[in-house]
Image (cartoon, rainbow, N blue to C red; front, side, top):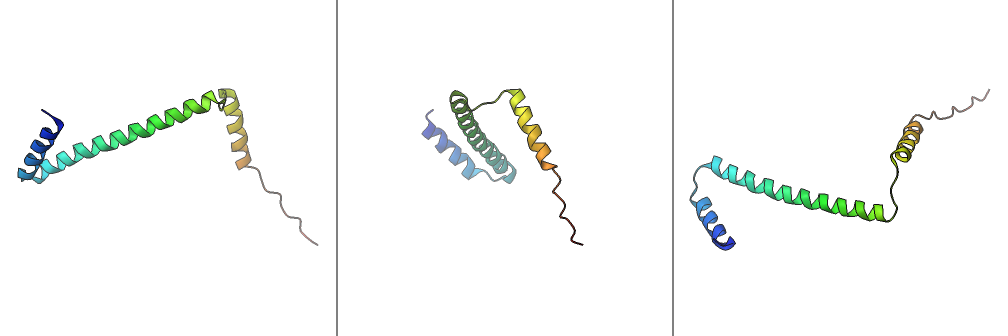
Length: 87
């Protein structure tokens, strides 16, 4: 069965279906597949960018990352200097 004949059969079945719950189920199945394909495509793009970054030397060791994160977190808690009171 070709893709075109499968689509034609599905369209005929959907058109003749009277039960909303069945139509909801068909809709959910098709929506999930669409979201899955979109998610997979996004993940592939992220992996490709990550590989490009790695090949270009844009990476850190775990120790470097830990040090950077520690400095970043410490910077969040730096107290602002209190203004001096004029007497």
